[in-house]
Length: 381
Image 1 (tube, helix red, strand yellow):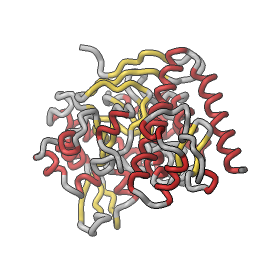
Image 2 (tube, rainbow, N blue to C red):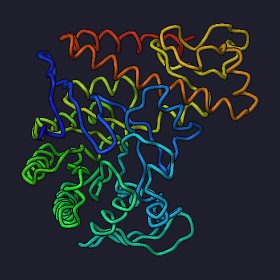
Image 3 (cartoon, one colour):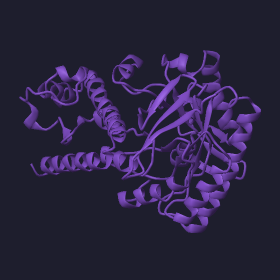
Image 4 (cartoon, rainbow, N blue to C red):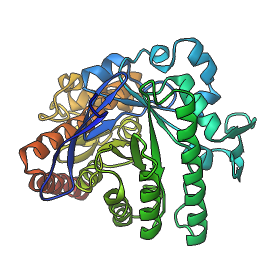
């Protein structure tokens, strides 16, 4: 039986990788960007839209879906795929990050985290057993372990304790997934390597988790407020110590240039709310940098957003898209989100092609240079 992850090619000038990840609901070509569907929907889009722009896998969130409508209800209605009408792979975040960023009065214990719901203050608890049970109810193709995400900046001793606790929780999550038959049924569980800005702690976390032989691994605790050079340094301090034959996922980022830079560091999977979030405010991505359609200069502009990124939104002029954005029409969210997510998906598709062609380093440098030059020119203008 073939491995669930095949490493098809590695770039010779960088650590960029071309891979193929098999899941219960389909094959994922990597590197890949995953649209975020926190509450069982990618905001303003339908599953048909997502298929149209080439989305291979989307995200759901354990914390939010368990609060509302509840994982038992979703289980009873056939699981998250049936519930939201998406027949492709789904990765679910464990909810740990949301507990640490949204919940009120959290209390970190050795067996998990007690907290209050950000919706109504209800007292709740998430530990390894709860997190894995919820994701089993959801029917996730890829389930994430619960971990403790240290803040930035972070004291070394506090970070070390968080890494130790996260390792214990990861072991428990794997044991629970094994005992329940979740792994045997073809679901994947990914571990998360923390370590904040401490290279040695990141290496220790990556090596300890690698020894547990998880189906995949994530680099956690990046893009939590630190400057970009520090973020790249953290990723570069982690990926070399993760198994080469398992997929690598950097959670919750980033801009298009950041994604290309992290692909060069050996990352295979990405998610970020940025493309959908900024779309709702009129910001769209182009190969020449981001463009704010609310600007007056687009009021009579008959051109599409981009001649190079062709999708359903291409048929509409910048003038029309500006009009529906300014007018607050709901369709603006759909059209601009569709474009932005397609832009991200097209970007990683190009990355895959250039890794295969053997010129990823030169191509990505040129792509980033053009994007950043265009962004600078628009800001100056």
